[in-house]
Image (cartoon, rainbow, N blue to C red; front, side, top):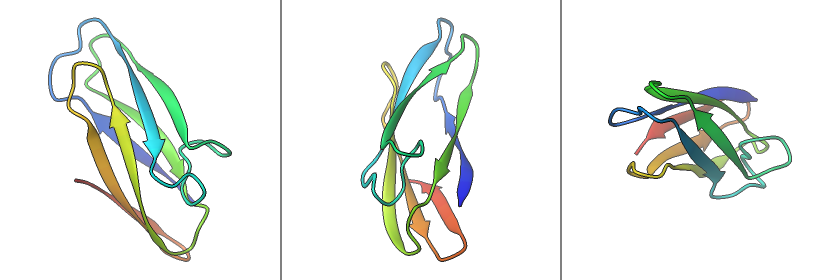
Length: 90
């Protein structure tokens, strides 16, 4: 299973920025197949970025964390199910 995860920025982004996105448990929910983290370029003027997360387990919860220089860290609680998962910005 995979789903899009939107990473919103809380303020203007005039120069562009690199977001580091990671999973609290890469064995269950890596951000990129085979990896528990990735770097995402957010272009100048953009208000958000979108990444795809993939679930590799059928149950449990995982945190997905985005760290962006100059912005507050963001966390999503991802709940895994046999045929679905949900994410909620915490």
